[in-house]
Image (cartoon, rainbow, N blue to C red):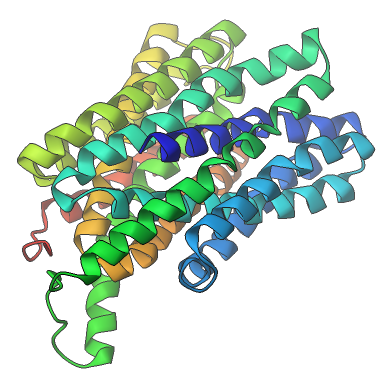
Length: 388
């Protein structure tokens, strides 16, 4: 776990540092708002397109090599931004970073599932989530400040941090090989699938669709607020505080709720977190009703509530996804979960932006609240006893 946490923190540090800065670099080169918006849009689309292929890459090429390749694709392109500010060049680098990020997200959550027993998945996923969230809390707000005070080159240098995680990849691969060899000496504990191959595949899709949709509902909300908070709020100070509170609340909840899920299961926590998402979005809609005078305290409270749900449901839905499959299918479950996360974020950005342009941010947030509310029945569904 320490090796995985170091690798994960290094990878997400480089990714987070460039998230707000790469679009700004495109603007520096003359791109308009639509062009700068493509920078992270292309990154996210390529990430989603890469993720379904990662499980097969892990099985054919090996965990260590795949992780190392992902970290190289994340860590080398940041410095290459200094070659040109041209939008086409930046989009090409976004493609490379998207492939690397798709590899890191799927491989990382598959590795954490394999490293620990099922009974400890919640706590392990909580620690893994903290390794993801802490760099985001620090570097997403710090990026614009570094650009203003030092220059773009400082952020691009931070973007190479994923390269520091490469040394952990061989150690992780060795441990996973040792665990696989030890398991081979004992009878398998996973149940033998019943039914035809087609029935098994349909059952797997149904099992993974529930957590994917639950996750998409909250990442739609979180992604929309992270993307558009500066445009919703009339005060830069309130915007900074709101984003800080959302990311900190998400980090703490994602870490803490894992142990609770190990002891009590995921079901008691799912529906309250969906409800918190809806309440947070409603409060945010009220807070930004007047574009020239944001209700600061209400907006901050809304961001905390959505942040709690955002972090908690990330942990719980990954636990649900892993509990629905056999060990050999952890890569598939990880890919499905990550696709749900990134698709929810992408839809949130596109949908909320479109609705806000056509109507207003309050209307857009009310639609997001309705979408989150539509996922509430999924929180009450029971599923068969988890595989052991």
